[in-house]
Length: 372
Image (tube, rainbow, N blue to C red; front, side, top):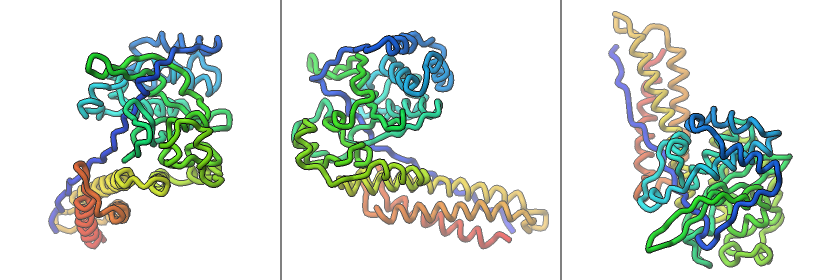
């Protein structure tokens, strides 16, 4: 019996870059409405530089003066408004942060996805339920009446005081303006997009999954495109929708099932195939890469178990479990990719990854046959 060969063919997940920022015609002044907010704002403004590169240390510092989760969310918001600027260079050159939360903290720059991920990471560290919501925004480059080809923005929903609250930290941090033939970004903290009402929020933001509108009568895309006024949008609302029950059902699902459910809901609400395909492709990449890691771990263990006579010793239980997991993950990836197998663009090819996964499944099936 001879050693088996490792297989290394990990794929890369790709994210549709979301980059909407506040309209350049809007310039907001920062307003402190009570002494508690000013106290938290000043605390965030005086954050020591030596804690800003470490999420855990940063969260621990910001939480110090806060009383309850609402104040924790406020001070997180203030810190982001005061410290993270929009990555206008990355936006213009299509070169974006690839280092996640750490990259945002290091450079103090980001696009809307980065703002949303950083805020969620802060909330996660503080034990506060928070989601990243992707959808459509009437941003600086939006033309009234223009249809959307794909989702272009990301923001957050946070659970506070037994209800979900809407937050757009990108739009709270500053604005864009065309000046002297170029695009310029100005940091200017503003609280109008923090704890904003669903009725006001939907005038400029439309979630890809309608349950995150937090409205019992969701606004359809055609009404969102046609009007900037919630009252005008009400003429064409959808039928009654119990979004609270829908969110509760969603929260009972595991992470993978949530991803698929949101993709399906988004496509049913507004069929932008590119967004739908990326959801499925990225989840398939996750499953495929897990299968590759499991297969290689099993091969390594199997090769170590070969004794001097060339026979595998009785350590197959571990191998069988890991290989079985690999088979399951390959099967999940193939099922996902089969739904979008005809989709391809300049970044992804579902059919190419599908072929790799089928080959991986065949190799893993053969490996399982050799185990005893």
